Length: 402
Image (cartoon, rainbow, N blue to C red; front, side):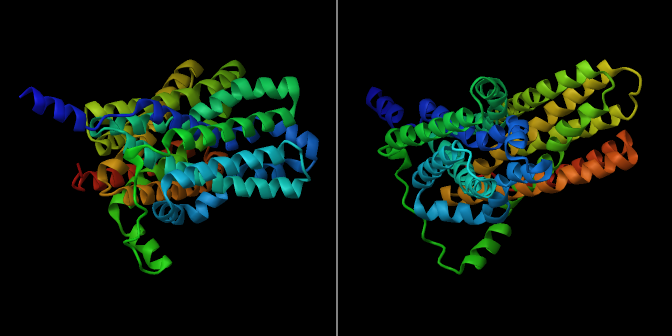
């Protein structure tokens, strides 16, 4: 009996927490490709004198690669190898940050930003696939919840440490420090994971059809499509809420406070969703609960007019529910996917839909708020939540793969 129990304990899969945390930090270093330009926006305006529109385009250029190549990145990663794609993406990101640290001409800077999109895309496709592979079944939702916080944490760290570096040493030091950080993560993960037996995955070659036929198969696969649809309506909403709602608050002190607090609340919601999906309910139900919570808060907002403090409290709860959506969507992918290849395709599609939502959402919300004010925001949020609820229910009908 004792030999049997020893054997089962040896063969039982376990979560490799150190490796999971290192991959999460790699995700943070990749998300800093967005955050470093956000925190240094005024400095870039002053240095390049290109105007807010051109500099803003350089900020958002990182998302172009994900918008266009999200699905194909998942296909490539499954064939080339996830660790190779991850390390290559991190080293590419480091090289581009080092080029940016020389403050090159604006046209070259813009090109480096577009190339950084491929670096960022490689990380967000490969890293969560590796995290899922390194996680025991009973921890996958939890580790996906941890992974889902990387974007908010990157902005928080850049707002703290990055702003300090920028104020004391300038733009060059900020970009140089990011280049060193992301390159270091690439080197560390290469040596830490290259001989890991759990990641000894044979590149996928079973799909021999044409490229576009493969892409259509991915779009038609509900196991990849539905988590991405759930995620799409989150990205439509959160960036807009974080950008425009502080402007609806009459108190300037509360405005500044909410600009700092809301991203942290969102990050907390993402981690909370992973924990709930792990221990209490399926990720699809967490997404459903989150969208219902967002819709309820939006309705409450429409009845609040006098108190700025109550308005901020309700917005905080709404952002907490919004933050739960990516945690649940990320947890859905390893829950529903039948293979690492299908997982990578799901993360690629998630990246593509996420960039689509971040592109379409802000101008739509800006127009609605400009024309109708707070009621315009509330109605648009309710419409988005309706679609979120629909796709969460649909995803809940898919049989879970254990």
